[in-house]
Length: 277
Image (tube, rainbow, N blue to C red; front, side):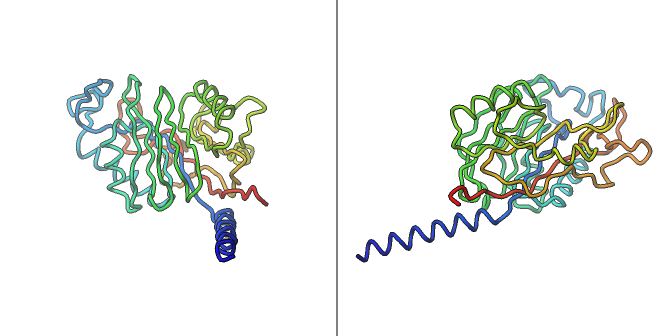
């Protein structure tokens, strides 16, 4: 009888914990930095312009200043998950994490891109526990636990590769809650994902400015295990060129501008859906 009562209490506590999770929001950012290189030559090449003797005259002082700007932006956003594209290597990602006040750990894998740019995930360990990590051209896939629940994060900058991978994941790992971040394009009909930034796009906002206006180059998609609460483009005034109204880049061709990226970050607040209710 005593064991039976303990099982009842344990079941109640588990249900209560799941209910709390369903009410507690979490947050994630995706930001394409464009290209943040260190000042050391890469053994894989692709960074020749971003060396002190290179055509862009990239220097330690400029690298340090860029780290400070990006770390300050990450601190302002104050999210437990920060998904990045455009870091040259793990050391750059670690330098960013070290400059931030957010106590971030880093997941990074080297990609096969000719420009040497990679994905990285900055995460707070009290929210996210990474597990298996898989890297492919244009993709970084991270399985783990997000606040005690299983999750699969897919970072991408290749819409075609993303579409193929999402189709496979939805077919064979349908029980793993999925979050897709990055340059994805639109997925085929029937894929059980919600475009969290659709309302922001319909309101005329976007992450990149072209001759045709703003367009939502980067997106965040959620499986039906997650409920989007608020999603938008982060468009702080400091990120813009006052003259053109476009995002202020680090370089404009070979002219150093001391800015950020041609892309704006996107963010999402969300929570888990209690599927048992």
